[in-house]
Every structure is written in C-alpha cells, then in structure tokens.
Image (cartoon, rainbow, N blue to C red; front, side, top):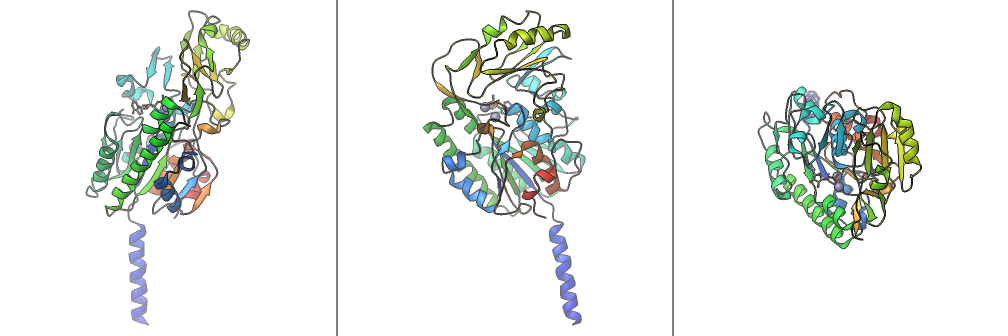
Length: 399
Ligand code: AMP
Ligand code: ZN
Ligand code: ZN
C-alpha cells in the first residue's frame, strides 16, 4: 500500500515536471496563400498537417489586405489602424514623407512601428526570440531587435531559412528562442504574375507544399516538441488588366496642393479641412468600380478611422478592379488589398499543430489579430494591450 502511494506520488511529480517544460512556437507565413488553395490544388503535405491539428476555414486579414499591414497585425495583435503600418505605401503627416516597403532605411526605422511585436514581448518576459524574415523584425522596435534575425533578402533559398530555424531550436536552453517567425514569399509572387487560377500558380502551391514537407521532416529530426502555426497574410483575386479605374480622371478633381498617396487598390488624399467636403462630393460623382470614404466614415469592422496616417479621403477599388494611371496590356494578374470582410478571396490560412494545439478540429474563419493571444497563451506570456481576443481562437488551444 505504502509503495503504491510512493509510486503514485512519483508519477504525479514527473507529470508535473512534464507540463512545466517550456513550450515553443514557430509561426510560419506563406505570403498570399489563399484559404482554398490546399483543396483546389491538392497540397498533400498541408492536408497531412491539417489532419494532425486544428484548421480555420479561413483567416480574415485586417484592412487593407496587403502584406505589411497584415504581417504586422499578426505579430502585434493590433489592427493596422492601431499599429500604424496602415498600408504598404503611406504618408506620414508628422514627417511629411512617404513610407514604402521598398525603401530599406524606412523599413528599418522603428518610428513607423507601433505595438509590441512577439519578439519584443518575449524579451520583456525574459526569453529569446528569433526571426527568419518578418515585417518589423528588421527595426529596433522599443529599442531591440529579435535576438536572432536576418535583413530581408528574397533570394535566400527556402531550405536555407528552414535549416537555420532548426539550428536555433537546437541551441542550449539558455540561448534557444521560444518564439520564431519564418516567412516565404513564393505563392504571393506567382499569384500576382499569373493569377490564382493559373497552372503556374498550381505549380507554385505544389512547391510551397514541398517546403512545408521539408520543414515538418526537419522538425521531426530534433528532440523538441514545437507548436507550428501556419498562416498567410491575405488571399488573391483574379484581375483582368482591362478592368481598371482611370486615376488620371480622378486626379483632375483633386487640387494640386493636396497630398495624394496613389496605390493600385487603396489610394488616399490629405487635404486642408475646409476642402474635404467639396472634394469628396466632386470625386463621389465619379464613383464607379471604387468606393470613396471620408475619414471617420469607413466601415467600423475595418478599425480604420483614426490614425493620422489615414487620409482625409480614402478610395478603395472594388473587387476585381485596380486604380491605374496608364493603360497596360490585357493580361490576367492577381491582386489583393480589397475589403477582407466582403471579398472571400482575400481570406488566407490558419493551420496549427503541436503539443498545445487540439487535433482534428475545424473552426469558422478567424480575424488575424487573434493569433497573437493564442501564441501568448501557449508561451505563458501576459498580453499587452491588443485588439485580438483569446476567446475567439480558443478552439485551437489544448491545455
Ligand atoms: P504585396 O504583395 O505588395 O503586399 O507585397 C509582397 C512583397 O513584400 C513580397 O513580394 C516580398 O518580397 C515583400 N516583402 C515581404 N517581407 C518583406 C520585408 N521584410 N522587407 C521588404 N520586403 C518584404
Ligand atoms: Zn502578402
Ligand atoms: Zn502580394
């Protein structure tokens, strides 16, 4: 009897020891991977991954459904209207200058980045974090870079990225990151070139499937249970280049002293306040295949009404259309950036598996700001002030 109690106590202690082991999270993004690609193109490694874990039917991007705003929403748990990367290209009224994703010094300037990215939160809570590419990882936000990171270079092979992530997870515990981000751009790039329904894109999805297969095989070789969360920032919509809104025509209604931020799907105009109503009314007469909003009147769900980097007038192309300044050939291409709530093709993916993730579940589409509180729950971190809510994603979480 006494020995039974001792065995039971020992079992309990060892069990406790196990549950107290440190958890790890690898957050992987396949840029532009639409919610239906796995089925549409029979991506078998993705299917295998989903079977072992939990999947959302779609990941709802934040507005605008572009790369920089959304990667940064995922890593901060904040909507773009609250973290400040309000588009890939935007105007900053304080500096009176544009931010652009192709401008290295600006991309690496912490001035533009609000919130607390997961790498910085890890540091604040006493743990290491790493990034093999992610928006925001190249700027010393709140004074610090991730403990291990690389400046973005799209030419680095996908296997090189994975091999280094595996090395990070093999570091001795004191040096080992508990949170790692990893990014692949191939699906977005091809989606733009030939559209989401092309044979070329099908081949690229198969290539991405091989990348996931290589990642999961590599993780199996190390003795560390890692929670793997696979996401994308947005989907892709087929666009005929002949379906466009002539931006030159709109420009004729905008005074020369206004600041115009022109982009294909989302354009903005900054004006002296006394001009806003009249220029709005004037542009409104041309409203065809796009929508125009006054700042403050944008759909509530977008959480895009307050930030100083949002223009006084916001113009959004309708799904399937794009603003253009010159005629281009009749090719079919792919675009994103549209309203993520009414354009299903903008939805991305959210699949997860690992020791802290439930198996065999599917959930309804989830907004991407909720990924942050899932990750902090797994890592045992306290959330800063964020827009995401754990209760909206709790189906993924296994105690
Ligand atoms: P877009 O499709 O215009 O929203 O932007 C996608 C592009 O962003 C991809 O083709 C990447 O090359 C680029 N990109 C992704 N991450 C970074 C980064 N950290 N720095 C610079 N460019 C990036
Ligand atoms: Zn993207
Ligand atoms: Zn893109």
